[in-house]
Image 1 (cartoon, rainbow, N blue to C red):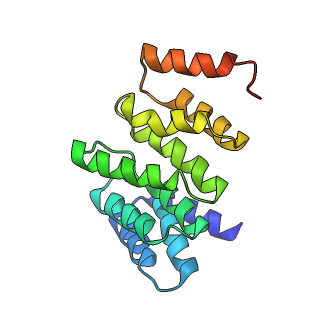
Image 2 (tube, helix red, strand yellow):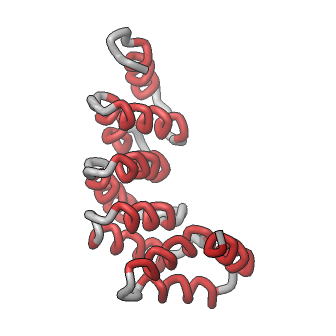
Length: 169
């Protein structure tokens, strides 16, 4: 679609002015403009503190709008964070992993896996493996597989879940 094509072209320019345009769009009162700004930030994929702060603020303020949440999660930059900031981000993502919308829950689980630094950080994914919701289990399993965190405890827990004959995989 035309919007996606324009975003791809702007993202290739990768100029601070384009990033500022996207940041400005996220502050617009129009919901669609805010989503467009977040989507453009996701396309730019610039690891900046401004983008991280903006996306976490958007997530705290819009926990009932799945489309805004998904765009903000997608726009969150992958970058090194202080332990305090990482803990704050993981707390927010943990909250979102219990959202009513299954797409938000799934995207949150994948984001938790991306930001996790240790096995403890992955507890929301292990809890989702016990969920009665099949989609949450599948998302958690896939997110665990993508996580850079590894441990024998994590591997054994995951293996136990996957080999449980009472589970529907």
